[in-house]
Length: 186
Image (cartoon, rainbow, N blue to C red; front, side, top):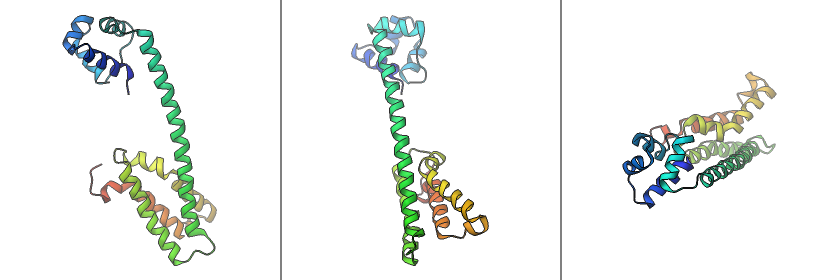
């Protein structure tokens, strides 16, 4: 999100100016104004100064607001990363509890199999705008870690035959091919 482009567009509209009028007032190319307002590029230096003068915007306040927004974005990134880590750990614990528990029987294995389809399918429904690689890496990294752990712990010939391994592969497959299962285009 380009805070400067949004602020310029908002200020221009408040003053009742068209993009053409702003281009004439600021002596900046119309196409440049359009790109700035569409967040295709961010004005710097002389261009930003000319536009701010034409709209009576304080350049220092605008740059300060952009800096605050960038700081908030870093905070959001850290919080989202922590949430995704906790979410992946919880998912790994759910599957591990259902399938690896000493009292695990056919019913709990079947429950794990159902969850390996429905939890990732729910994630796909809630992350429609995310592409399949990003979705699988964000929400399936715990599954990937768990699969690698099973293979290294048990060895490949024996590790891939466990019910947990099968459920995790199904869950990753649903995360990756979820939109196909829902008959939606990627």
